[in-house]
Amino acid sequence: MILSPIITYSIFFFLLGFASAGIIALVNYFKLKKKYKSTEGLLESERLIKETLRKENLLAFKLKESIEQELGKKYEDATNVIKIMDQDILLLQKDNEETESLIKTTQPELYNLKLKLIEANNTVARLKAQLNEQK
Image (cartoon, rainbow, N blue to C red):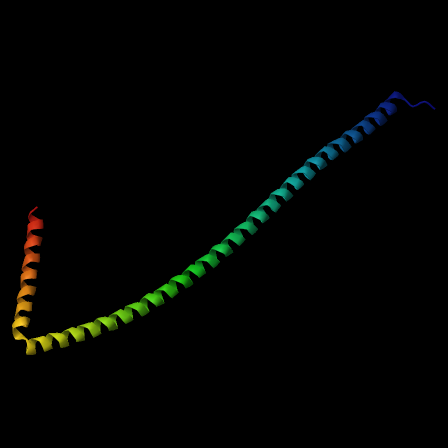
């Protein structure tokens, strides 16, 4: 039995259409697969960047904490030194007052000369300040 040309052409074009649809589907499949791999690579890259940033943030936070601890220790040390210096100053002031009263009672002439020397030094300092202001 010989197929009529219409049936032959119909079968031929049906098969050609089916093959064309298969080729188009394969092309779309490979494009989609390529996009999927590209997206997967981008996501992996973003995960790595996120992990790197997280590690850097953790390192920065630890560094900040260590600096804060170091500065806190330095602050405590400085506060202790200031307290000791204040105590030493008070002792020196007390010793100076005692020496001053001792000199005043035992050697009043020397005490009067000392006061005049202090006044003269103050006067000289004032005059130098005035001279510097005029320049």
